Structure formats: C-alpha cells, structure tokens
Image (cartoon, rainbow, N blue to C red; front, side, top):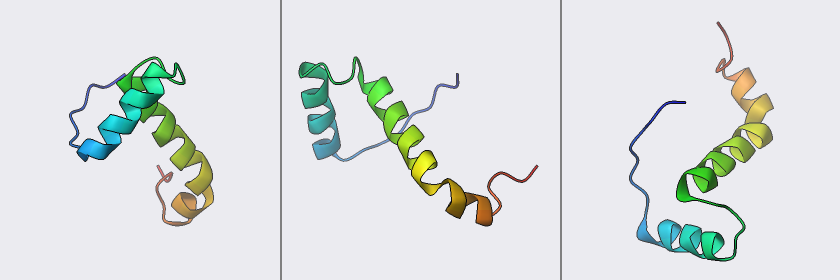
Length: 55
C-alpha cells in the first residue's frame, strides 16, 4: 500500500469519526479506502471510457 496525505473538510472527518464510534469502519484510513473503492466500482465504466485503465 502507498501512504498518501490528503486534506478533507472538517465535516467529513466528523462523520468518519461517527462511523468509527458506530463500529461501521475500524479506522479513518479504512473509511477512505472504502469510499474510494465504492467510487471506482460505481464509476468504472465512465473511467474506462476516459482511458483511466489503459496501459
């Protein structure tokens, strides 16, 4: 895995912390990984058309 640094709005972090307290996700990193995974899954066809998966 790669380590990256991102800046997110405070409200995103507040809501991520709520998900952690509710035990929906174990950590902030996992919440962000899940969000990215779901985005790529839902947008796969659009991203493919834009050439994101070309080698």
